[in-house]
Length: 209
Image (tube, rainbow, N blue to C red; front, top):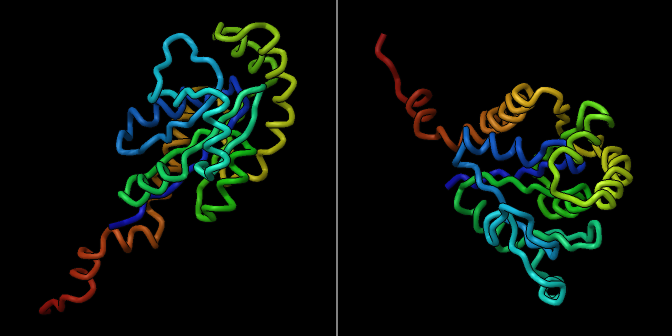
């Protein structure tokens, strides 16, 4: 069985990362999305086990001690982490998997999965980022102010990624993201494995003139 491909998608809060991934998976439902653990409060409309595994600090720290995470970080006073066992199981099944994580987590994932494909998404301007954060109405003003303050540090991490998408026009950004996933599946090594029988038929069956 062909092993699945691991992807990391990162962006500053408000850049549209989550919406783009949701739209991509609507087009390519075979792509899995890792459900991270977090200690942050659940937002309106979120479901435990769907958007995140919501746990308390004690539980999260016990998982860290047990080595359960492939990556984890503390962001805005809350922990976020990705289960190592969950990633390995999905990839072993042959399914591609997206990790929607920040740049700190991406560094940890690269160290353990050198073949990971990474994508960074940026807003078209700081003004647009500010408007998006205030417009979604999910966070208090002080939280938004902190997110904006952290955004510069986050956005400076983009050179460490394989691909960069500027999310100015959502439909264009979605097409660009889809191209990355499609192109990855057409890489030579993966195609040779996926199309092994077809290639053997093409190359090894003599034809009469």
